[in-house]
Length: 435
Image (cartoon, rainbow, N blue to C red; front, side, top):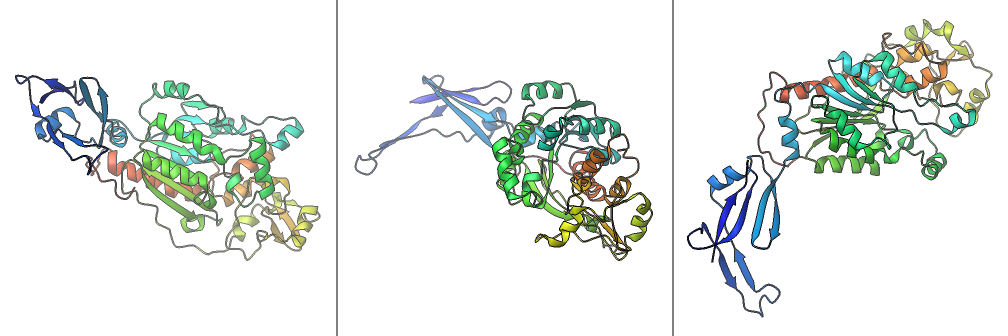
């Protein structure tokens, strides 16, 4: 018994069909086993396709897997697209420095634009919180507006990440060049130690939780097809189920993963803000930013020039409560301080675990301008148009500017090496080791 091979069109694999002796191209080998030794499958059939000419003609060189479709009288072998290779191939003749940015208060885009990136599409929506509903206000547009004030995205979508329709996203992506980077600052509240276990449980019940943001993010990544995915969050995200799901799924998609927990003090920042970064790239060999030697100088000169604008909060109940709480409170900023504790988005609400200044027997709450400088955010980032509470919240939930600049510069260098104008790396079939 023989078979014939029909090559598909354009390296689309090949089909195998029964053939007469005149059309026969391959032989079918059969072997029958004794029923006692192999009762479930006594008949073995083997067809060998080892000709390099056939393989080169029908399968692209980067093929790692193929699909088998069996029909009566025909078996079709079709190459499965190597997703990672296909993504990399798009940037041979176009810039990789276009980004899809989701969940941003604007600071991270300001960093990216300073380093030469272009934000093609931005997805931003501030969730309506319980305190917003209690006061009858809706601030869902405030961070989207701040993004427009401080950066120049081509398209801004003021939509909840859970509600963005993928068909709509795909249509918008079809209007723009390939996206080199998908940048996600996923909500960190439910991974942070600053949120109580009780509040985390309550957020699961009322669906205000941010734990499941990884699900719509991963679906969007499948549509965007970026060369690099960057996820930024608090350190606890790394050991969480959400973090494991994010990393594992990206690896299945063909991305190489690099995970880092970095401290802002190691990159010239004023505050010891630790952040988790996941960099997933279709190219291996991402090199994390190298820490610098910590300056170690006193912080008081930075604080003192703003002290006149800082409110005296000595008599507030939240300040008195710091003395009686069993929780570890951030250290006061004093004339001897060499660094600043992590500033939270709740900084302006008078909470006891906010950052405060202690001097001359009085306690002061940092002004908006001081908070901005302590987070290394330049004056060119303008929050003066917002109410003080929203301005402080926007700054407090943002990335540390110097730390994020170091990470984004490393991502830029990684893309330059692999698909910039002067790339020094050639790409073909690669091993899956190290993913």
